[in-house]
Image 1 (spheres, helix red, strand yellow):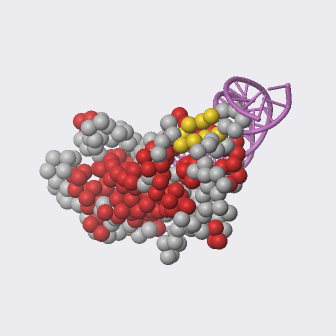
Image 2 (tube, helix red, strand yellow; image 1 turned 60 degrees about the horizontal axis):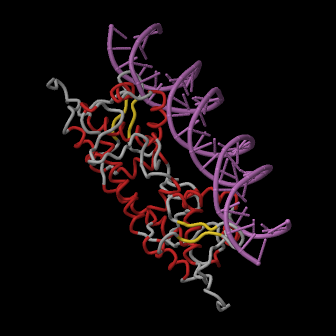
Length: 156
Length: 156
DNA sequence: TATTACCCGACTGATCGTCTAGGATTTCCC
DNA sequence: GGGAAATCCTAGACGATCAGTCGGGTAATA
């Protein structure tokens, strides 16, 4: 399993927010109910999304969450990294500024590490796929089949 | 962490086998020593590689392991899948024969699942990177810096 | 027959993922 | 002002997996 349910639930949460066209904060309980996910677990996830600036919150009655930005400006790379932490394929893999291929269990004099070449390619494949997919892509895909929350007096 | 050390150690093991040009079985103990990895743990990993047909074993004195095929014909996708199991990005992600985008927690009538669209792209990115990299690529990379085991009376 | 090396299963400590419990705080509405 | 609705925050329970160990096999060679 590359990712845990943190990513799955969190992305679902973001999609649900993106589908909401009402312009008012959407309470987490209504998202949890719609997606049939445990509310108290979602609270942890949405906290990470908020810390990353991907959602805004308004407290109190009639409060809830809204997207922090336009869906088209939110990449899945940001979302998944906010939920799961930085995407590194392997324990010993440290992202170095200069993109050097160097492994943490070898001494610097030992030269480049062959496996790190592989993990670098894997990381590239994942991050590219995540970066190319925006929230609006997924919202569009989801809404093409199931009705979204309508602005006010939405049609049944 | 996308992968565990099973993949890291196992790939290192395969590279070590690929670098061996002597034509004789290479005992696991000598790989473990060269890579500074726990021998008894490696035994579990090499068992998986053998089961996948990626290595052959010869028992007894002067025994050891050899590659099951030419390094250029071994992709890292095979190696990593043999070690880690099938590459699925998410719990609910089931590879379906027709590549349908269907999620396991939705009823079939619920229509396509938006997150599965994302995970499909991620899976594609990973498997592509792994499939494009062959063992010979890594062996070549490793040997370009550090000397490999030579056929017989190899130069110092 | 002694040594080498592969083979196999059980076991353990540590970490992580998933989820719950309980309470504190903020805000709206009457 | 008071109650209800909601976010926020901390502390865990619980199981699964990971990383590694250990002890005892089996096969082949010298």
